[in-house]
Length: 230
Image 1 (cartoon, one colour):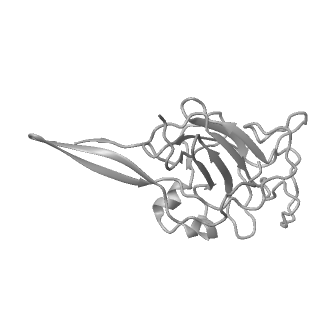
Image 2 (cartoon, rainbow, N blue to C red):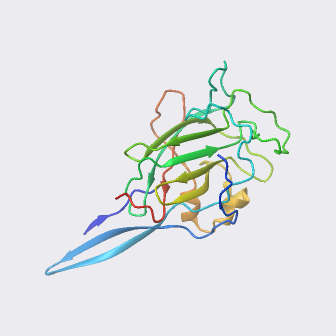
Image 3 (cartoon, helix red, strand yellow):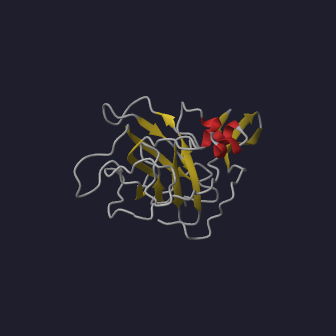
């Protein structure tokens, strides 16, 4: 039996982004060919892709002129963001497991103390002057991305997470990424994903090998529904 399966992990938001939580996952399919004398049976293997999650209210309004893929430093300023610095890597894929090159990724998150760069953040935690808060980047020709950031702090009702707005040629996905090893079931959005497959699709994995000594690396792939790599 030979199986072909896809790999699976996984700014402002003024447009028509729904704030509803979409509880249905995106199907990712592979093909499994079973050869028997004189016949070939084709069986479809279905997996869950990256589900949509609400964008959240705290996309930075006071955005820095520096929005590159390193959120731990701001151009023209000395010092570095506080907290645990990490590398986050992954791929953007279509439903067949094909790569999506040149996809635009907009991401934003709280700092290590759980504070967003947003004037209406009511948490009271301090703003980190060395933390960029948001980034804009594109996947390379292999559909890969890499970001350096810090582990965000939790805040009232929410566990550690990073917001993503990903746009390919035809599709857009707004979602959130969670961290492994956390009590994520306490987070109401994570809990709203009522299957282990959907929860796994929004949870990064710890990499066994680090890109840089002393910097933890996490892996998270993003799967588009309806995005063709051809």
